[in-house]
Length: 248
Ligand code: SAM
Image (cartoon, rainbow, N blue to C red; front, side, top):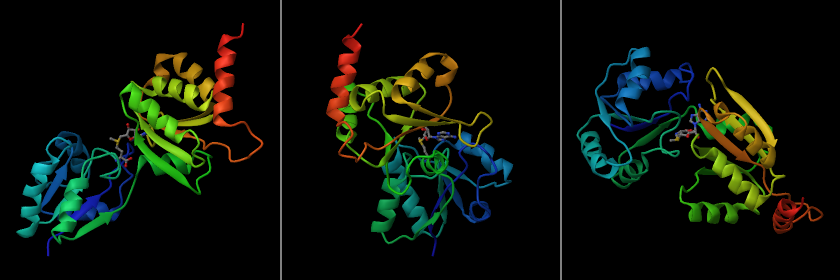
């Protein structure tokens, strides 16, 4: 019977898609995409000409039901997002959940994901990590979220927009201390791919030193809090940071 395929697409470098993914996109009846114009470039590069169907955050619930009916009537559907793996800070959760509930087969077709790609070359502990997606935009919720994470010992992975990266690093300095180690992975798989490993304090200076430094797409990784009993607690570091500000 017809299925829903969840297909990962490249993060930037157009070569980063699997043979199987291309094969499946060529064989389904319909491709559900976040931004059909954006995906058009990828599809035409691989000479995939299939009808597309817009499915984004704002219409997912309602449009999802239309898709489920189509699958039930025998059409196979592939879901893609603008970049990387659908559902990972991207639309698709309601659709997949409802397909599962309705007994429709959902098949993952794995590939790129910015979080995993970033972590794989960051040089931070990768045995355990927590993926945090995007931080809340609102000041209070953002502070609460980072405060709740301040004692987390696993590597933390955030997606961040160029508009907010500087503000987020400021919050990290205030909540986790200026000494906390950060790694920024920028423009992964693209021409200007780069990694920056700096303390939070140094990272803020670097970001503020040139507006070009805040351009592009970012994954922000935060080293976990030290587990060692001998090291300073997060509270002590916070107090020290505040004291340092007051000193001449
Ligand atoms: N579903 C995607 C995935 O599997 O990674 C993530 C989609 S989310 C809407 C977009 C965010 O992912 C960006 O704001 C950025 O944080 C991160 N991202 C996507 N592509 C990237 C790239 N080439 N380099 C760095 N970060 C990237």
